[in-house]
Length: 71
Length: 471
Image (spheres, each protein chain N blue to C red):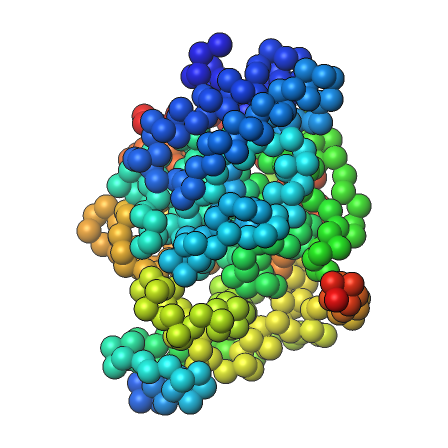
């Protein structure tokens, strides 16, 4: 599992969104986030090579049109 | 007609009876409101009961039908919505303290379409806070209870929907599903849940958990009722650019077609890691389908095991982004488990999200390969029977005093099909020895809800129905 320390988690939460995390939470989050970071790395090893981002230009255009009409 | 008789009809039967004026929407609505009054203190399915609104809707429906203006199967039928769906002028809490007083100024498209079809709104249903969990043990509005055993969870996040259907405190409901939240409560409560193809139903006015995984859809008493509801809510919506322009068929059109000669795949990986009782019930359901003439084949999809990791990598940052409007400033107003998911998501690297989004097509390709020559795939809906009500967050308590992990025991079975966006139907297969519901899911090709419903309906006609809970 990736090594993400509680101290790092606390510092990231403070830096990224100004959140003061308790020691207890930081320990649990370090474990959970560490596992998720490992998962993210493993995803790259799966033979599921992605292609394009799944949400294409037609949706982008339609959403822009909706926002434009809304004013 | 007695209230018990009125409550015994599914939507399909009610629609015909109301059209023929054999059932009065006003009497029917009073029967449901009476049932809510009698039972809801015990099962806690409702956050808000809209009794006066329901009576007004019912009176209007009755007058319209009497004047010869029957709008369709939902005209005068009492329904309820997960409290994630906007209802103009009616509180929409998302099961959260943060939104406990939020009153939307417009309707979600799913409710607008049901209202236009003449449905009667009974109220808004309890759920897991912000749909971010699968137990429906809500810290702000109380735990929803399983109608078959009040000590057990109904599943979630649309727990109130499953409970209301089986407790007969609503004739049909709308839930939402991001990692299994329609199918899990349908499985744990013993009713039908349909997560249709992503984009088939508008998400406009539905409070998001994860935009690219969220689906709104029916939790209902029967497969036909789910199909009837999909007929009403499916179709493109200009307010939701991601809603599909695929044509909307009549979803009831193949319910009687049967499965003779149909090839169905059983997903090998999802028959591993279940309890013995889940597997026995699933195998018995497969035998029923075989007896109806379907050809069943084991099919291995190793990539299916990546589904939960992909779903988590996508769901966490999408949810966190939405919640930045309240988090961390109102961190203390979240329940402990949802707060923890926010804390974790807040320190996740963006690369995991991007990589997972790109890999969705790869997973879908693998599943579609496995479907070549096969009409649908089959798997248990959950690996376990409903756990006990507890406040353990993502760890759930079992009757033997142990615990089980929500991810490996439940979401592993359902979340892959949120990642692929495929239509998936959960249907009860029986009761465990402890009297708790068990369930199977039928997975189809994108936009092929017709086949999923066809398989479900054939099985439903042939299986032994679940006995009603002793409430």
